[in-house]
Image (tube, rainbow, N blue to C red; front, side, top):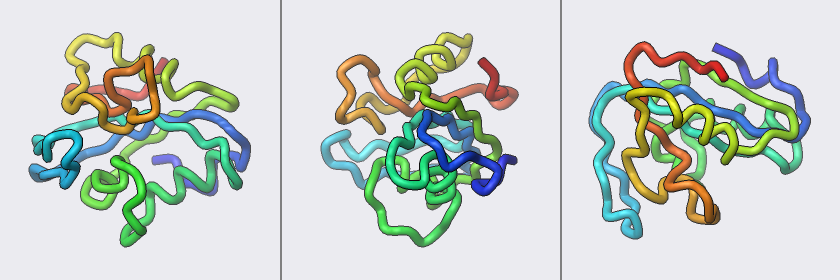
Length: 134
């Protein structure tokens, strides 16, 4: 796994490959309080604030954080098994490329994309053997 300190403190986009060992009921009323099944997921995000990719991915790797974003519910329960990143990249472009793979789909419409007008969701359900490559 890529550690947060291995990432640059520069702006960019990233994808987290996560393993969820048990079902997770999300307390997200606007999304209908969905339940994620155990399995593998990819979350695509961006890091254009202070500390860039290193700070944002580092936050996702920490447990016990304040829940601010949809993905925080998932990263508190799932294990981040890999990270893909692109300097100055776009989370929507990463999601588009990764979402074009067979067996990949958005399990919860609107997850992680409430401010996005082009993506169904920024969370993808992926097959067990899925690898983060583009």
